[in-house]
Image (tube, rainbow, N blue to C red; front, side, top):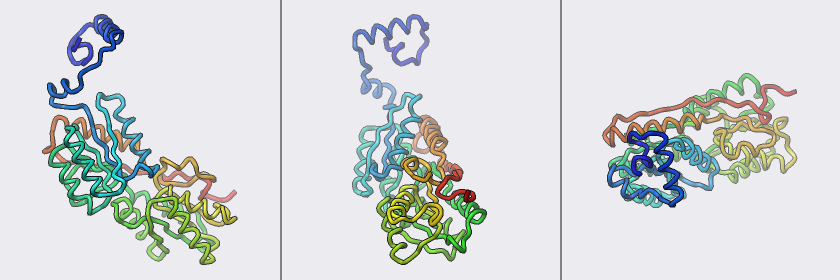
Length: 315
């Protein structure tokens, strides 16, 4: 029976099918603990995200789980609630459960260093989307600076900057992604206004309301995340301003809440399918190489999806 259920040893297809049918009829289940002890692997991976209330991180978790679907590896997700102590608890919990790999989206560019170090000393560790630069681990993410170059090209090619000047509504640089997007924007538009807050729709709403209170009636808003951009659009439209005729809005991420935007959101889409495939490949390689294996950094280039909130031209 073990040959049929594991699928790892030779057996005729006919006999395997008969054994599997009999096991199903008897309600037989594999003893995962026993299998893990024999193989010295648990066929499990831990995923730690900063905040599952953030639809972007929820979407990333779904994509990671989906990429591991065809494999025999299960993914278990833990939310740190953007708290470093909770993040450490998650790391300790997954190490205690002897996961084969740990994928972590750090909550803080510097503050998460000790937690990343703890993880990498015990298990194959991949920093995902955000990273602690001082920590030597695998990294898989998006080329955020390239994404801002795409935004800059779009604006210079299609926007009347005298009528709709550029304003950045971004996130405080406490994570590497926020840092890199801010750097990319500043390089492209060094004299443009920058408004910084958290990665949230509420912040986007507050920033847009502040602009309106200051009598700003037209601009091109570059949001550091789609969720911020949607907050901006909601506040603007609630006050009777038009998108894109009065305010253009450009987002960043292209997954999660993007489909909720009306009009459809022009955004930099992260290639999450390619990113999560890279994670799977690194985990599988890590099963053979262990924690001392060669560290790899993989950055995938995003694409700009031009939609109605900032079209190539007005019709």
